[in-house]
Length: 242
Image (cartoon, rainbow, N blue to C red; front, side):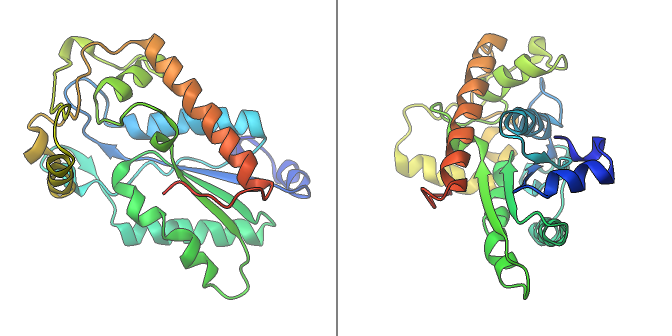
């Protein structure tokens, strides 16, 4: 159920039941020479729509701006972690006042993760607000190693978008064979300056990506998140993906 497409009456009829709101959060930032800057928002919006369809969740509009300062001087439209948290806390409070007390925040950008995982604690401190908030980052629900504009993201975008320019795809930093220590060091540097570490803004190698692989990865992610949501919402597990 896409909230913005329904009337006030339809939404209030739905919220008389035990409703769950789903908030996708993406970013606008460079994704190498071949993917649009909306890639994170496009992917998380698609995944959220699939989950909403399967679970009957109330799907809110995607927050398309994230914490992406690390991509400078490459293109990014960024908001601070504090701003992102403020928006989401306000939304959670507003949902509660509209009788929706269970909320899933679905993250599509790695740079948002630290800010988003603090939302449940921040909302819990607000007097009179009693919500249950789950925070998921979609890449925690797939077997492949996450990348940035590499094989995974490019394959997913080929499956859902016509705006991929594969003729411009270039190999970026491929961490295969690096020690855990070196990988951790590069990850720390990338959080400060992604271009410094990757040079061309790509973490991984997108050149062999296919739409078929993208559909398979998406199916894996959606199936795993649906299963985790069912487990958490039925009270059988309090496990959250951090």
